[in-house]
Image (cartoon, rainbow, N blue to C red):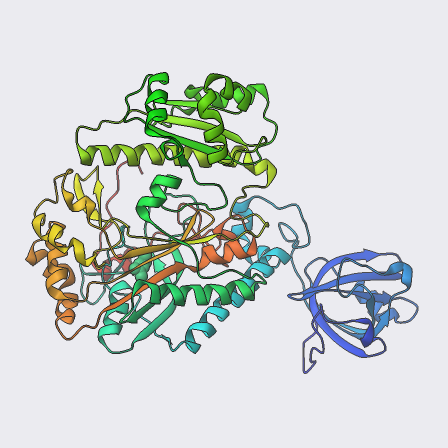
Length: 624
Ligand code: ASP
């Protein structure tokens, strides 16, 4: 005996009523969150997006409504008409904003029933994630999910408002298009009308946004879905959302200002103030001082011990460590690691524990300044004060021999060593500094937002598997003007690992937050002659370039203005702002790591008839 809604109108949301509403009539609609039956009185917590209100059915005052309330179960949908009443002092619930009032019901309408859900939105203990994803509509009813999705809306809106006010137009670009090279596999969509031909879903709107600059739109943005078929990587989604933008006549700084502006607005929408301008650092410096290209500034940089010493002291140290003078020594400091047990010390100190860190020839744990002072009396003070080491800190020295015979090899081995030290630094920080809140995972609630611009990335990176140079960003990225001659001199060396192509710097930049890359962008190549050279340097013949990017090369020939842009991951930004642990917590309908949507059960095989229409025959892949 379900009721119709009829022309009944909701007067308040379930999170709205306050003591000042006492005495008023109210009509609430929502889900039965909880039901407590005390015999002559039944309490219902009625829930919607905004909160819960206690609703009271009193048998004496209203036997008909009370009788109906007897049949209510979790997640039934009801409308209640009643009078707002202040609660007695001893029944006030301080944990909810509506906790000082309750609604005394005159009439109830049962709008819908619910099967017993596999888990309840009101429960704090979560079922496994598979269950949550399969019954996503129940999961999304939970308060934390409602919070995350609301946060997502607020953040997107703040970004849209900011960019619109700055003169950017939001312009849509096609989903059914052709391949955009962003380094992943494409998702393909077969064409029925042209059997054997496929659209590719965009890995990004890169070429379209550049074409929009050629088309005179000056400033473009889009909060847009991108599709990348990547092998399993934790915390990636096959389809994800980017804040994508492009503008004409920019310097790098112009793009950075826009990004700092919209991030300030987005963080403000989530209740946080951030400081601008963000610090900046070259890629080289990031590698040298942090051992990776997305430094986490909440931890101190590593210190090249050579910086603390005179050349004589350095020689002396080299002799003591029985190393060549050219050896490398990095000091890694993890602040406030606090007490570390003897066993833990032994584990850290044992190089064996870090076999996966193959760069350093040795790792020496120096947690005990007294012992260190005894072994290296002249070095001790210098290093301790240079690195500002405090008694509570964990610190260690990592050293490596270098092979100075050849500058290029030397550079690579320094980079390799620094990267390994950087890995060690983060590993130790996660284990030890985390205990003391000096270092927290991105998802944690301590809101120490340390942004950074990293620039001057290498233009090309060596692909060990394919044995060739590939674009480090994408092939439309401009290089530094001064490096043009180097490009021309080495234009045919795509398969030479020692090629100076590796030294060419791009006008590419990343925005980083607490050790996480939020987005990348670049100043683009706007001249067709240079774009062709880049394709040539990448080993692409003219015919191949024409076949893949002909339309784009042609467009570049029609008065293309200098332009540049960037794209940032919206999902990740929302995840950080919501304090969530995974992207799946901030995407309403996410996919699993295997790119499966458990709710709708996609992907699925399709019917023979559909395949036939598309001219497609499915082959059995061995191992299936
Ligand atoms: N298209 C690039 C990406 O998706 C971003 C950009 O260069 O603007 O990573």
